[in-house]
Image: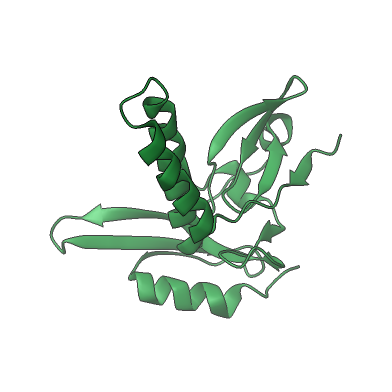
Length: 158
């Protein structure tokens, strides 16, 4: 089994609607909690995909092998992540190349949003971006500037 694999899982509005309808059906039953967790999972995943936010999303195990997932569909064996040289405080999965472009779910990108933080004084978020091609890392951008920067750099594949 390859140390990196991909699953196509861009969350559509139709998928969210399906889970919302399911929640209506199971409301007040013992299945409501599981349905609520599933719906929150897909809402969060869809939000991360629309923000072009690549990060260690969820851990998992396939055939006894520990893996980490990225919202873009990249799945990496944890044994590979332990060998990655990390810079700028990024997560190991963010240093690996060949992330799938989001929210499109097609093609690869070298640039993406790597994090954000709430700035109380400004009452908004600031965003962090990284380009694997030119190795440029920027912090404290507005969302508009971060998105524009990612779109300018996403073709910088090495």
